[in-house]
Image 1 (cartoon, rainbow, N blue to C red):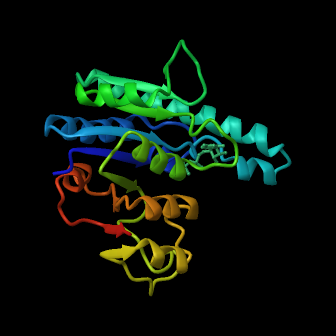
Image 2: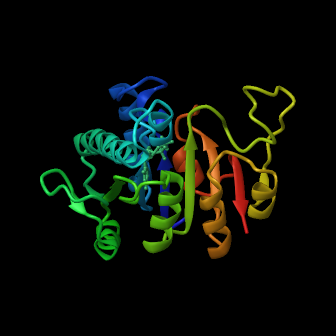
Length: 234
Ligand code: UDP
């Protein structure tokens, strides 16, 4: 079993495919995270925000990119609060730490404090991305994992169950990888995570496991080292 993990949940997980937050889906995810805490592993979560706003999409529709990215980051925080709510209702202690300070709703991002929280069995939920426009939450997930010394990045997907040679929804001949190196992922231009995230993992030899959320209990399975999805390593 991994001792400390960073779980990346993209915005689409929260929205159940729609705009906004689907409480039923968030409850299911919270239950899975609670099971990880119960099993004795330390866990931090980075949430995405694509179920609200993506800066690049708003830019294509005429908005200023920087302002649109800040909207994206604020959307992320709503996902964090929804997840916090369901976890706390299940009796799991949590802390939300945001990269943009908003004292009424969250702590500021203080990595050493985040580590202390995890050591005490609290789930730390990192919100507002990096606090910087032009970044994605994939890159944030890797950066937070490195800074808070997590052993692995777990990438839970709602649409696919691992890394494929091409998008399986578009190309039916796409094949799934059980294992992959970062060099392979970068060379093939695989889009499952952004290239900056892959590069950061590669340079720091941080493994990543990409798996599907379709089967309940997969987050715990990944934490326990069961072979699910695709493992990407340096
Ligand atoms: N964002 C940003 N800086 C960050 C993280 C996110 O500007 O450090 C913005 C960006 O506009 C992005 C949006 O927040 O499109 C939502 O994040 P992301 O697209 O990574 O969410 P996901 O695809 O995981 O749902």
